Image 1 (cartoon, rainbow, N blue to C red):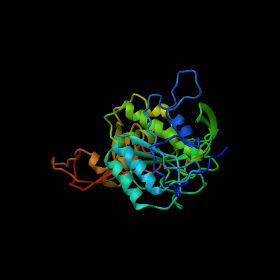
Image 2: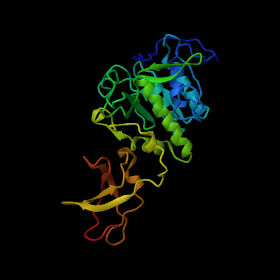
Image 3: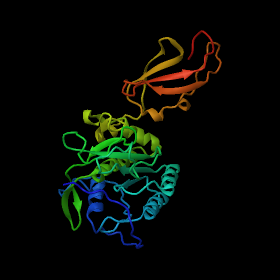
Length: 319
């Protein structure tokens, strides 16, 4: 079955009671962290995760943007490393954008459902998925055949990756289990993965965690041009023991341009994460410092090749 988008409207009651009265939240929580190896029900992505339940939607899926912001701010204030946002609806809200940016300053990662309207988020923004911040990940839904789900929103620049979101079995209320579909189910797969990577590498910054997640996706034909990475979450690759980072395989001048060096790496690099600031030094023929002006991904290189542009310091050897 298909789950509807969880849309925020009017619901103002404030209470410490966060008991699920809809099943949606329990289902999402199970995907993230249902306990494994106990011969019961299902297994979540991260068996040892600590979950904080914050409720701003009522049993009909109605709530206010202001309360969604309060929930995010509270999670950040209490030290949560990642939050899952399996809902959509409403227009752009400057206060929500500020909350996401504030979360970024605390190293907090915001994972959002792309939406269930089979709409292009690049053209028709959906919130909170479309808030622009490098600590936010937007997730589309895929099916068992690695096709993008018929209901899933997409966006070559605004949706980052796909994750399973069709007929997902997880926990529901009263100790039961059930199937649900939606980008609401795809997002918690990514949230659990983020928590798992962060737990394995507590010293990593939020952008290192996100880069690891996005550069280890499985490239999927049906997601090419539909999501930023062109791929679906691969948790196994994301949590491999490789922590030394990408290595330069080769470096050479770009033909016909002696102010650009092309670097080829042994693995893909998230383009936005590689900037001139990452280059420690570049010296000219006489040992003088040379300014790096830009770093750009080479089209068609699967994000493994980057051109480093620099100011010319004359003919000779640069290193």
